[in-house]
Image 1 (cartoon, rainbow, N blue to C red):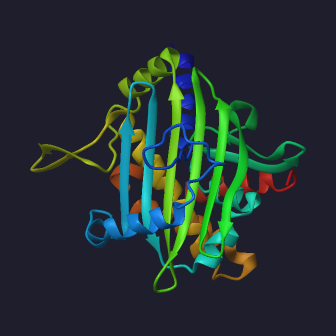
Image 2 (tube, helix red, strand yellow):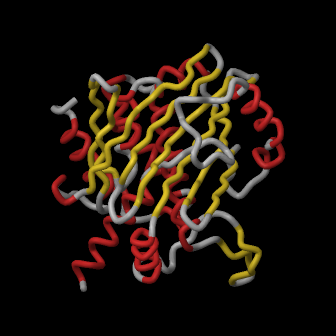
Length: 304
């Protein structure tokens, strides 16, 4: 029974850790075929979300949304970041930079980008919240595509057809547009599909180690004098969408640091940021996280 629970736990760390992102309201959109007016649409969304960006529970210009349907899950974040668009575009139009960002997540054990005749591939291993052999982690192969890249808008997507235990159709998308003030408006989206086996694994996770965990959205039901927070699979999606947004922000913030110090700065930035939302995101102490991530980062270097 213990081995079964451990297997379920690892699977759901993978599912929760996949930074799934797809365009708003289009769970099956092809990341390589953006709308012709995507930049204009994202700017319109920025204007529409101004009130939420100005005042929210995150204490930063950020809006988070999640959706659950019978066979799909999706999480997304819109965020205004204080970095020039050119810097953001350069950072995330390079698949190796994606690996340097993805490794910040506590459940990412390894990431390697490679170029093949069919295109660029990101091999990502997802596992436990401590250091472990790669053979014990789950490997997911993502196809990497730059759908659009212009002087003021870009759209980058990752996709994987299959995953473990009945999961499939992983879609990851990051698009961004320049906005006034030399800033950038980001849209991060994440989705995947699951069948009966995936649903059963999800239910087992939520009935055991995930039963007391929450996300960020208010449920409207008061708990201990305050608003209740979403749990279940939407809580899983929200926590990990936030972890990946904070990884993107930590990567960008470290670009101002000397190159030799950037890796360490990213790790410190990510942990500090996640602790601002400790109820949802705290898992280990700083020393444990830093030791694990330094080892994992070094492990993926020779293969790159």
